[in-house]
Length: 351
Image 1 (cartoon, one colour):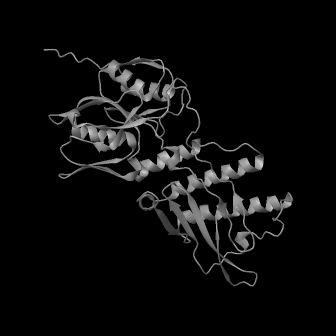
Image 2: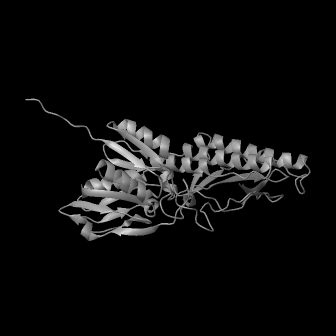
Image 3: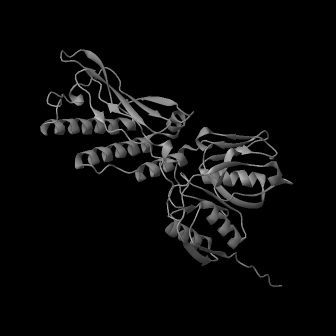
């Protein structure tokens, strides 16, 4: 007896539009459940493919839409980014060593303001309306639900499931767009977790979207690297690029445990000693030397107030341990203990 196995056809002809337009078009074309997340909700460009090979479909989605189909048999899709607001720095960073201080350019809020862009423009940031999963979407332990128009599913509003759901704060506002049909609820939560970068946990008492430091690290770095840099003048451009590179290097060097501590709660801050053996110390030293060089260059260019600047590296107090802090928006600070002109301990320089 011969058994005929028919391969699934993955086909799409998408003219561009909102995330829900794409998700619903792909679900209709493939007759499969589709779940997608983005860091910031944005419009998608035109895409077209027809294949029976999931790997080929993944390549098409990556090349045409700049999104990834995550490993597995599910159509779980994402841009592998965080919301820009989660990694933005809106601050003035200062040298505070007693003798002088410098204000490094404050980073503007990354979310778009003003009039909304047309939704048919690829990568236009979109306004969305959060919605929950109604209890009526769950029947016999299976979920059937789709988001439409400007809706996105909010993970803290999942009703009708057999167990309560716990969500780490990092994922609470993650926009999720989906069209699922008769998906077992455990699989439903697992696919949601995959798309937003959470660790799926199922116990006898609850489902959980637990913090996944490795995945969030990748998404934070990818998001920071796409953030714009001022082109006002070469010196400002170089300074901002140096700051971006420093943040990325530190985030990549943090251990999973350190990242978990830094992002334990919204608004939290973690402090780490820059001991001689810490992998963070070399990066921190290079950053201080870099900032010293920027100040000395400004002095050579005649910038007011810079002529008397004494490099921080020449004043480091080796008897005390520098501290590096990381907060829940991936902002990096350093506290460098320094000596005064008489070689005595004189507080710290905060960078």
